[in-house]
Length: 472
Image 1 (cartoon, rainbow, N blue to C red):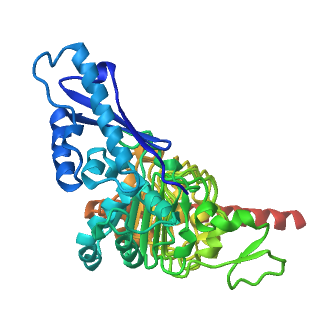
Image 2: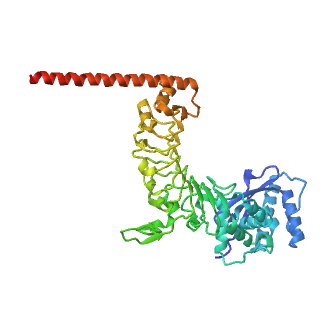
């Protein structure tokens, strides 16, 4: 692949104000603008004449008389544009560092971006790895590295060992914690849309944790190469399906099964499982279904699918190790037989859905923390479905229609019987006064039940007497 031709021009018209020149740089399809005064051109020229023996006469001299006249401005603009074009033609293979910096290659151009990153890691890479901190990269940086690796060219083009691509590869091989944050709209002053730039994650060999946001699943390549090492995977504002992230190769096969699964049906592919993944956070996406891709993540303990578009809960029975599940702010209206899908979970968030019934939660016997805030629960009787859960300690019902019922708190707590003192409702510890009221409500309820039983007993006796009388 040939090196892309780089061009620059100085924009005319109203772009020139107060002796500030707006330079448009073109690198293939990518364009961006840079602003500089004449003094910046002068400083650049001083460095180039000293370091690269550029002809001192190449830069047009500064003029004082009539410097604001339209004719001088237009002529100066053309002269400076010719100056930059001449420099770019003079160094077609390796742009000198002062010129690359002047034209912001380190922000927008592939060679400049990788050179800047390599130099940063040359100086700080070992320190960052030792500290074990999360390292952030943009999709544009990763795209640049991926593109550089595809080119049949030396890993160091400008002769400066500090900018060798090897520093990046050594760092990525050992990095454990990575964050990739894209942008909406063009990058900086350029026309570059990061969401259209593919990047390859296979250069990372030791990652334990990765967080990706504002990317598209189509541009993320090589994620499956992390299946053997990754423990935590977070993807936000990037996908419409779990399958495209967890099993990107699924589209290539008509039938597939996870590694180690027993299947009576013929399959065209066996997909390796995520061996060490215990935390999966796919919140803030546009996921509408929990698909069969979860068969590959059976070790997951923490699952966050909040802020998606789920209307049902399926396939979670494959996740035997689930402990914490967040399904808040989806489109759930009902959750039937939740224990068959959620097993022995301890924390469940269903906040921000459209639930008006709790019948499906009656057998979640291991549940400790339950968030039902911001739903459509209006009837206190629904609380009976969770009142007998033996381990429940924290319950959030705030912002439900039932909250406006008089003495709402004590009436809810009364549904837990002898465990009322153990339940923290709506993040508020139960008071002694509330417990006294709960005892009164329980006594009234027991009296009512006794009265109902006695009334029912009288009816039975009366019925027997009538029958006896008839037979006589």
